[in-house]
Image (tube, rainbow over all chains, first blue to last red; front, side, top):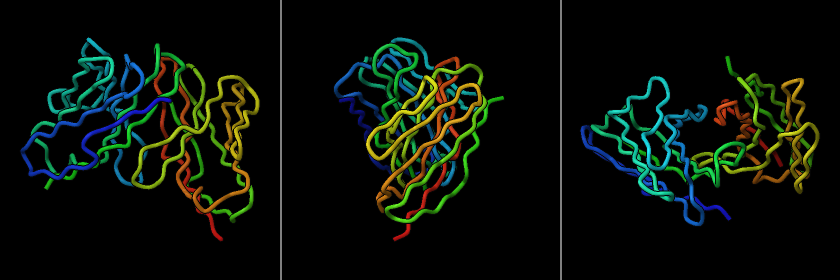
Length: 117
Length: 109
């Protein structure tokens, strides 16, 4: 199998605080992980590609200083939303690629619902 | 540019068959994925086509025509639990998935 977990499942925080979301591949090693954001009734939006041992590649329009990504091991990537504001409230989903990149299926985590008050 | 075209919403009856069409344009092509997404949940993998033709997996089948930039997902013996959004996601030359808004499928008794 290929199981990806995310923690926490949901989080409510005050405006201005930082929130860290963890994405783990439980039974495989993932050199590449992706972070997505999805607003209600909209498509998945790729935020960044996270590669183990190197800096993340951010999509255009995504602030790298606001959305900090760390991929410290082959099974863990973290996304930190710094100084969160209500407009950052969204469903954050990670996915992990099993094996070498290229043509491989992305296995999705269950998602983290962030609500910023 | 890159884009996906799927119907926004479809309605079908329990026990029937439904076909969800998808046309796409991408910079390069490394296969096409179909995902199912229930409301409030992350997508789950349904199928992957990289060669032309039909791939059958239980009640679900997926078809690809690379020359036409066209794919469809066929769902048979529809069940109420099949009510969900179905996302067609081609993979471009950078091995990134291109996402549309998906097709919301409503199953009626």
